[in-house]
Structures are given as structure tokens and as C-alpha cells.
Image 1 (cartoon, one colour):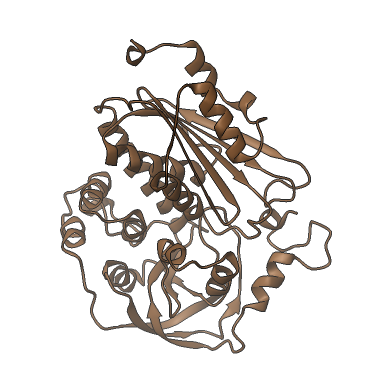
Image 2 (spheres, one colour; image 1 turned 180 degrees about the vertical axis):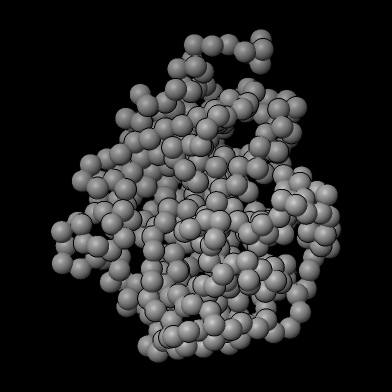
Length: 382
């Protein structure tokens, strides 16, 4: 199964792509050349950067993954929602004012958009961003109503001497979630005046996860270690997450297992790994999922004011039939960290428990963190 790689071109040999077929089945009957209604968020593409296309995402529903999870939407429900979502495409620079007004507002604004022709089905799979079923080239666009802006957002976006990194820290401290921060960064509303520009959405997602988790890591480094080993787990849309936290200074490792017939597993199982210490060099080969999982664990450690060495296991099964974006990893890991923890007497007990929870134990030889934990002692061990 190569749907996420071939993007519906049929390279798997099947007569019809199962993912594309399920998206087509959810499409609205009539595809119009105009839209008037809610635009809960914005989207900026990365093709042709820096001359990119952007515009509103238009759907009479929320574009906020935690809401989807809270409402108990199944993967088919989300597929249906995203299949009906319209991505407006125009020159991002020319539409910057409208894009920024939508991104600033704490409540969805309505828009009136005329397209150059009826919107078309243009589904593109990506492991980072949520898919969108429809797209339309914008001929004219009007934002209806005025943005309602939260005080913290107003302060961070009005201060043109504040760097984007510092703005992320200010917004996080105010309780603004990464989804909202990502919208602001995408719309070119964060950073010093000379450095503000629209940012492709897929880049902004990972940049915000990375920036916020780095800031949390600095705080975590000053906290005392956990009092004992803890194991957490959760599942979301065929993504099974197990987190093992061991007392010590910050270290992080993530191991991804893509099972047979899963999106990126193909006919055989695929295992990939990446990790870090207090600093990390280069972009993770696990892409956005690495930074999303790291953020969720860092949020937990900051909330309990403890430091730890962290192992995250992600097992992706065939249940995850359509790539929904790295938000699935973020929310699955957040769910794990919010759930009940299982204390373990020693590392071996934690590893055995993690293997039972994830469903197998052959991930262990791929870990670089476990040998380090079993052979090295730190000040926390004395």
C-alpha cells in the first residue's frame, strides 16, 4: 500500500486507490465558483517559495484537531470534513491583509470568495499537514466582520521588536496553543518588523513545535529529576504511543514502527529512530512527528516540574489508512501523558511493559538510549 507516496497514481497496482475512493465518496455534490461562509483558518503552500499561494480554509466547521478528538470523530468523519474543506489559492502577498485578519481572530470570520472557476478536487497527501479535498483559485475575496483578538495575541503581534522565537514563548506562557501560534506564524504576524513574512503552513507547524519544545527543554533542565520510572500509553486513529520516562537530565529518543500494509510500511515493516541530548543538530529523519511527540512530553514535564530521559514508541497500524498530519502524533502523545501512569521498579520492567503495550519487543535493538541508560550512571543515581 503506497497511497501516501504515490498520491493516488495507482502505483500499488490496485484498480482504484482506496484512499482516493473514500475521499471522492465524501465530496459535496455541487462544486460552485463562489463561497460565502466560515473561514476558520488559513493555509499557505510551499510550492514555488518565496512566491507562494495562500488563502483561507473554508468549511462551516472547526479546523482545530483537539476539537475533532474531543467530539469523538472517527477517521472517516475527519476524512469527510476535510473532503468538504476548500483551500483558497491566491498570491499570498496580495492577500496578506485578509489572511492576517482571519488568523488574528479568536472566533472564525465569514468570508465571501469568488473563484476564477468552480472549485476542483485536488487532494494532496502530506505527512505533516491535514489533507484538503477542494481547491479554488481566488478571483475576489472579502472578509465579513471584524476580528476579535485575544489580549495576548494582540500584544505578541503588535510588538514588532519581538523576535518570532520570543513571541512563541510569550504566547505559550499565556496559554495560547501551538495550533493558534502556527496560524499566526503562517500569516506573517510574528517576528521583528523587517523579518515578518508569510510562512508555508507545513513549515510553520514543525517550526512552532520545535521552537516551543526547545523553550520548555530549557525550563526542564533546571528541574529535579522524576522520583521514579513512569510508563504512559494511548492510541489514536491507529497510532499507538508508549512513553517511558526515566529519572535523569533531558534526553529524548523516538522510535517509529510502521507495520506491514500501513501507509509507509508497504509490504514489510519499517522501523526508524532518532534522538537527542540537551541540544539537537539537523532536522529529524522522522520529520514533523518527532517534534510533535517531543512537544507533548515536554509539556508534561514542565507541568510536573521534573526532568527525565524519554523514550517514545510509535506503532502505526493499517487502521491509519489516510495521513491526517502530525497533529495525530501530538494529540496521541498528549493523551498518553494525560492518562494514568504505571510506575516501574526498574528499567527492565519498564521495557517489558512498553513491549507489551506496543505489541512486540523487536524495537529494542534499534534503541540507542536504552544501552546508555543501562551502562551509564549519572549524579541522579547516587
